[in-house]
Image: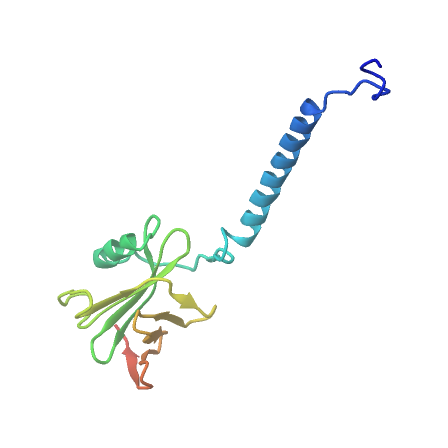
Amino acid sequence: MTPLDDHSRQRQPLFFPVVIATALLTIIGMVGGYLLSRRDGGGPGTGPAPTYTLLPAGQACLDQTRDMAQQFGAVGELRQVLRVRTESRTGAWICQDEEGRLFYHANKGGAEAEWVENKTALFLADVQHDGRDEYWATASDGTVFRVNRDRLVVEHTDGRVEEQEVVPE
């Protein structure tokens, strides 16, 4: 019996075609995964990336706001999109960075008074905007702060609501 009797044809080597096919499928899978991750905004469970719209902005925000916003990832210069003073002399500012993110900063006594974060002043990132004139942000304890050109409203988690009218500056 000769070595070719049980194999009518000589086998072609399969190693190189299998390696090439595996490499091509890996590249196709990587490109597909990358495109899918770009479409849904990130990795698993992150959901779509938020999109921000630049609003008409005025003068530069206060140094205190700029310093706090940098700690929360603000990009570039901050500009005021809303500035109000309430009847109780609280000053509240909504500022926007160059990427369109909004920040809330308020201080009892306004800009001229002493600023002590979490005592006389409150800074909140990730402010929402209704597309018209109202902005709101939620503090870490769940309290919601809403502000527009007419009033500042504080909605406490226990159901209490404080409302302060805005006065002309």
